[in-house]
Length: 205
Image (cartoon, rainbow, N blue to C red; front, side, top):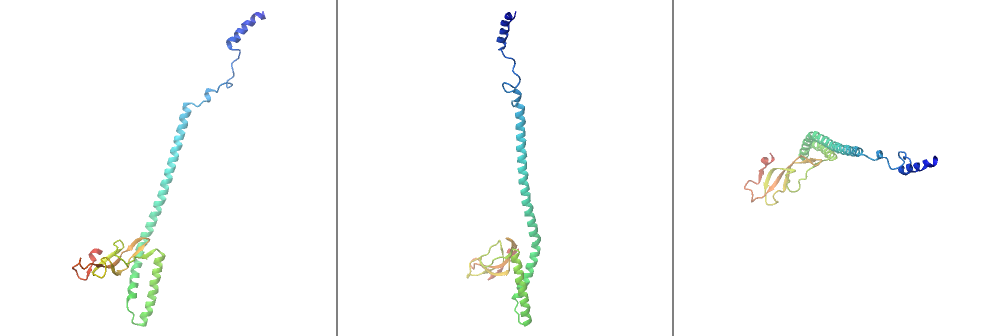
């Protein structure tokens, strides 16, 4: 009986290939382990969100740096403008000291007083220098950005526009004009039928 059934068993082996079903995972990679379209979409979304966060952070950093710079500039400007009124007052005091020094002294008391005035004058000049307050040069040609012509003098001895006399000193603070220098300027005789010295008050205004 067993011999008769063997061919039948051989046929079954031939049909099935002679092998039992392989266990899961022992052959080709399981399709569930392969990346799906949904996984790829989630990864792309995560990368896009990362780039957006990075871009926003960089933009926020730039805005913060700009804000710091503008704030520092505003503070500096406020301090400069707040101190400008005080500097203007000190310049008036310096003008009075200059006039006192130019007054002739005929007595010993006046001479002694002059010594004290000169010391005060020099101390103020030193304080101005230490605080970036500097006089405007007036030994050349008229410059409307820093000079104000209060008078013109017709002459052929100097080139037109040459500063001939300083009426009031001018000053700058950290490169900004505190007060224009008031000067008298040479004018050409050919271009002027006016008297030798002509007031420039209209220009000054």
